[in-house]
Length: 99
Image (cartoon, rainbow, N blue to C red; front, side, top):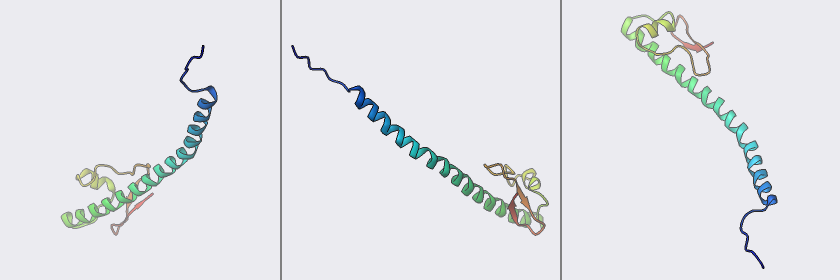
């Protein structure tokens, strides 16, 4: 009597697991690298946003803010550091930079 058995053999399952493992090993480092790139670009965009808020503060008050805390207390920005925990500073001439 012949039985018609359907399914995968152990070797076929091991080959599939090997292929999935190799694909994961190739993609995970790229995802981590891109997360850092996204954080850096987001931080650059946040610096540009704070720079525009500094200019708005100068238009409203007639002088540059001394610190980012002044912007935050007056409601111009909601946070004082980027997503990668770098703090933002304002120079005496109103230029925004990262520490």
